[in-house]
Image (cartoon, rainbow, N blue to C red; front, top):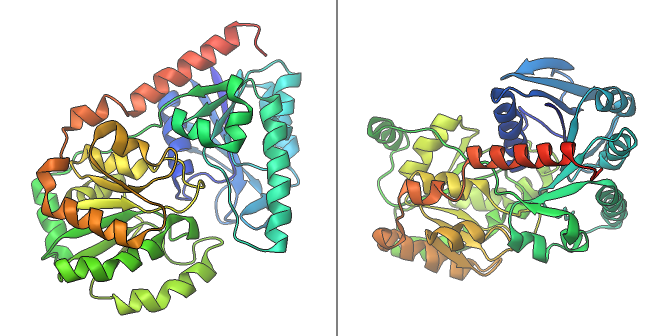
Length: 384
């Protein structure tokens, strides 16, 4: 099967959405499918076409940016050409160009499957309100044209204003989650490298406003009163993150205040992430809004034996609720976050579950199998 995967940002850009799309594309290619990714050349130094892990990646030059969106004048040409030569279109939203690509698929009689990753919420401001309205209209048009819409969880599908309006088209497919093994020696070397003497709280994310980093910072005084040598390790992009420069400047004084208890690790490889998760006593996803719809890193940590504290957001709370491996706390509540983190640090065995217990619910292989079945079913039936 020839599968066209389209999204605004692809690797080497790091986000939950890009990791999801990469695992899907690479996994389908490994199963023998011909997979092409159509995306933006968000960094001019990236090649416009290359093979990455068995996937043909085509990047369209960017002429301008609007907030985190991009304007690509030649996108339509590439979209038309590629839609003609592929059997199914897998579009990953939010994506401003999704309606045009979906229309091309429908006109050519191809199944169009949207994967809806989150409800986009921009910062306050008149301009962002305009952008938000345009995105909403674009999303609605894409949803009208889609054959099916994939959501991570029924919880998020039920609560998302967008997905609830297309409930008859929604298919629930758990997200692809995988993490390599890490040895005890790797973990010990990691702990020595960062001089970890006390409890370790992990956060793996971009330094972005919706991630709730300030909530964890607000929880630190209460945590340090119980465990003065506790450390927060932040894994992920934290410098010059696209669209988040002002947010980083706003938090800079707090990072300086807690410089002895907060360490930025930067972007880690998958093997390094496995070691990081094993070195943590607990991880947290204190996200603030539905721009976060799941938090893949929670399950990656759980596969490494580390529990999570998550915000009580639709979808985000599901890894904890489905596995029992952690706690859910009110959104934006620093005091509740501190209490939950300390409780897990003090009572680790109460929140431990086996790797098999987690993997039976979430795995890349399960995700690939369900996407394959959906693509095959839509290609073989008159549902287009």
